[in-house]
Image (tube, rainbow, N blue to C red; front, top):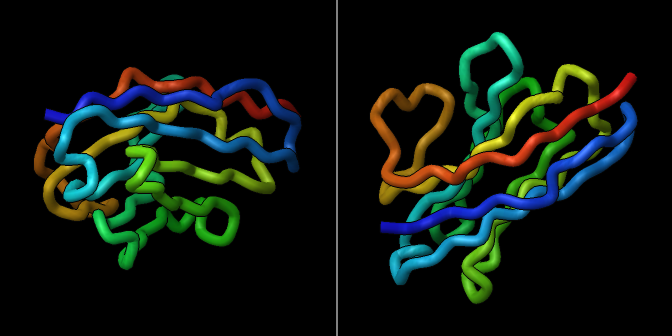
Length: 124
């Protein structure tokens, strides 16, 4: 089973950028779809973005389309989330997730692996 460790969170002003990283361990990384979810205070966890194992398919939540980009480096066993034009509404704990099948915002099944999360705070 893949183990996932996120990094890159922090405090940023509105309009700024951050890049989150998710380092995966385990031999299955290159065959797993990877993605990001987030949970804001008092809200349910929500889908942000996902990428297939080959990188050929990418899905985004409507709220981040055009501002966030997900990409991966299979040689480094790492998936990234480049976040631009950040808004206070993007403030949340961001979680990395992995599964053998690609997922998106309509996925209801339990995913195979989750990271511990990294906090992103966007000040106005």
